[in-house]
Length: 129
Image (cartoon, rainbow, N blue to C red):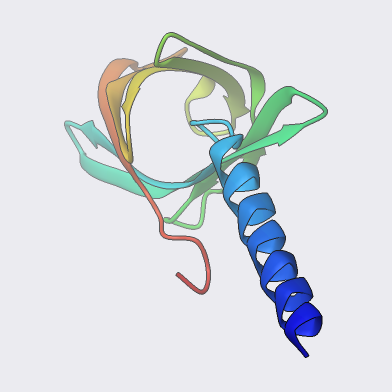
């Protein structure tokens, strides 16, 4: 009985340690972010989803206003700064440059057709959290 309890306790500790290690190694930019772009026409909102597959960052720019979704290209993250590019129908080629601070980011979105606009975002809580 004592050895069964010890084995159960050891298994629980091992699982908890693995779960903690997995969370600790997640890239700081990975996740879903609610974003807002402040323009003279008013704010544009949506979701910026950042993924990491085999060490390579990618993702999607999803517009709330029915503008669809666009794959991100050339996603980089260094020293708390994230950069990404996307080809959009409405604004042409866009480049985002933001500083990530925990669960928020702030920076600019440069557009091919309309110039640069302030861009800010907040990390969305994972499903089930």
